[in-house]
Image (cartoon, rainbow, N blue to C red; front, side, top):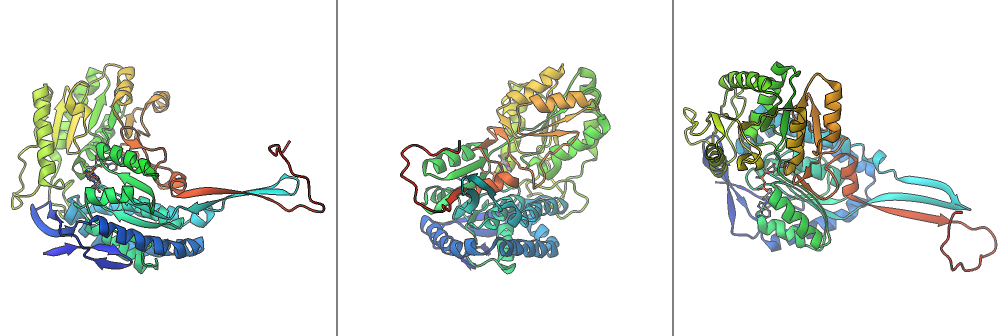
Length: 498
Ligand code: NAD
């Protein structure tokens, strides 16, 4: 059976561990590979290799580092088809969606290609008599990224793209559920000219994560995954003196005001709720129509769209979404559907027990729709992360605004309306980190920053853009004086510029 290995110091490495994880083909349910799970000693080997490589890499001028990123982008683009196939085969998302996953990551690489400009620092001439002050951003050393299964290309690139551009070396600990694509990306990064050890991929589970969180040479940890683990990573990493950003789960709402273009809103909603089988942290699993008339019209249109939805294997170009990542995840989603029924929501379309001819053992879940979901229900408060759309009816704009604002998660939210003033007020007042106005999945472009609020993110810096640069660097400020003539007397009071 194919074995997915670590990549350390520029070479594939089996590690010394005896534990392995199964990598499934979600279309068929078969185990297609096994992945090595790192030991604490393996992690130390990788971190030491990264620390050795970092010194020379930090001393490489930023333009040369940027050239490696530029060449990496070219190599990834040239192999887009092969990479998208590999990604889909382990994740289960359809090929077009895998291409989007890779492309969104490349957009961060494009941003990182401009790193010489971004790192220029600040300078004040003549801050005092003969005194100049300047500041520079310096790399931290060895940084690490721990990533979820649902974006095995984009999220690793958010992290290693910027971290390596500023002069750090990097340990990537991708999800053990779909580990092959991150390894392939790291191989291409080496091929693009990155010195061995600058980007290392270590597979593993809690053992590997804990080794990262406690290792003295790791300076910063970026995490994306579910909220309980994000909270654990944040507190454990911080307790060990590391800089940590930890993005968690989500439950994004789509608010539909009565004046919205309902046809457009429903088309957007269907893609955002069911695309990638709902396994996106920026999916829209909750829709909030305002007023009974809007709700009834919306429900009818959503039903028609669901009937036309095509679920298929990930390589079927006609399929709109494929299987979920694992049998365990399918069971979790199906148990939430049962919970919704038990809680008294109306199950309008039931996606449980969905099978595809010829792929009876695949991890498929059909599109599911609930209506009359109440904010007190557990199925509303928790993240399901599957193709399940919940209609929560609101009577007024204020009710609709309150729902996402008071929800424990605060990643993204969307509002559909033709009224600019209502949209503006909503965007200003809603207690959520990323807002879409007539945009269903408001993932910010690479040169802005990505990050939710409340239980959707722990720590205070976002991913990518200038926040990413800040996260992976530390500022040094130099105050320099070149006095002329006689030496001045000692000063015993704090110097001022007054
Ligand atoms: P997960 O939390 O199970 O795993 C994320 C990472 O943590 C993986 O690398 C995994 O190996 C590791 N991990 C798992 N259990 C651990 C433990 N007990 N201790 C330490 N590390 C552990 O998440 P997932 O199922 O891979 O991904 C889906 C989740 O990620 C969803 O909740 C989704 O909303 C979230 N997500 C959030 C964002 C965001 O930016 N906010 C983006 C994508 C996904």
